[in-house]
Every structure is written in C-alpha cells, then in structure tokens.
Amino acid sequence: MSYTLTLRQRFTVVQNRYDVLRGDGAASVPLAYAQQKRFSLREKISFYTPETSAPAFSLTARNIMELVGTYDITDASGNVLATLRKDALASLARSTYKLQSPYGEFTGRERTWWRPIARRVLSAVNELGSLIPIHFDFTDASGNAVLAIERRLAVRDSYRIVVERDDFDWRVAAACAVAVDALMDR
Image (cartoon, rainbow, N blue to C red):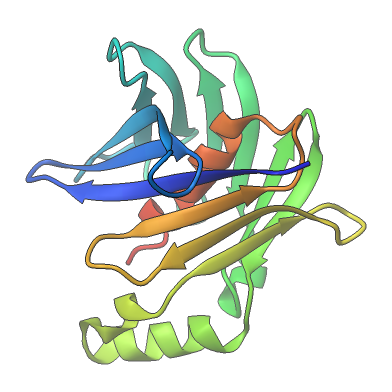
C-alpha cells in the first residue's frame, strides 16, 4: 500500500519555506511546514506542526560547510529517524544519496542520466537549468522502489512524493524531498 505527499515551496526574503501536505490535490491535509535559513554555515531545516508551530522534526548537517554532506533527520526530541548522505562519486553523473533508516538502507538517485547533465550545462550558461524537472527514485538493495520524488513544472517548486510502503515514516520522506530541492545548489 502506498501514500502520497505534496511538497510546495514558498519564497520569502530571509528563508525558504516548504509546506508538506498528505495527499495530492484539493483534499490535501497539511502535515508540517519547514523553514530553511539562507546563508547559514551549518545547514538546518526545521519542520513545524501547522496548528501550533511547535517543532516536529528537522534535517541537520553533521558538520559545518562540507562538500559531501551527511544529514540527520531527527524528531522533536533529537532522536535520529534516519541519516541522509550524498554519494559524491556517484553524484558526478547523477545526484545520488544514501538513506539509512530503521526501514533499511536505500539509494536515491536522479531517474535519468541526461537531465542532470542538461541541467548542469544550462545552469553554467544561464538560469534555464532550473526549469528542468528533477525526479528522484529511492530503491532498496533489491532495486524495489520505496520512495519517488517528482518535481512538477510550476512557478514555484512543487513536488509529488509517492511512498510505496505504509510503514515508511512520512517525516523521513518529507525531509528527503526538501533535501532534493534545497541541497542541490539550484
């Protein structure tokens, strides 16, 4: 059994803001919102409950300004839900992440080989590279799909997140989707 989340980005002057919703469409239910401060030395994206604005979970870099980032996804008490690490060597061709969680170890990579290359070439010349949609698939060791993150073409970034396992924590899925958007240096 699977479920769907939607991630929508909002732009503000001092931070990026993301809304996380359960479902896809008019009947979507708000689950959390995230805030990413711009120009911080140590990346931390905090997620809050929409009703009370209480901290719910976060995506935090382990170190200050590192080339190959390792990020912990933690609950409000600081307990690690999962760890997301960029695979630098594999990312030369297609951006690739390793996700370690209680549900297993997963590899997330861009779906096609040509889109990352086209995006990098166009971004070197102008801003058109940011218009190329980003699609990530997270798979288990057997190659089974667990999590799909698909960027929709829109004025502001919007992602459809399909989680293929009911027992997969939506907070981990949401944090991975924000990481795909915020940490890709777009």
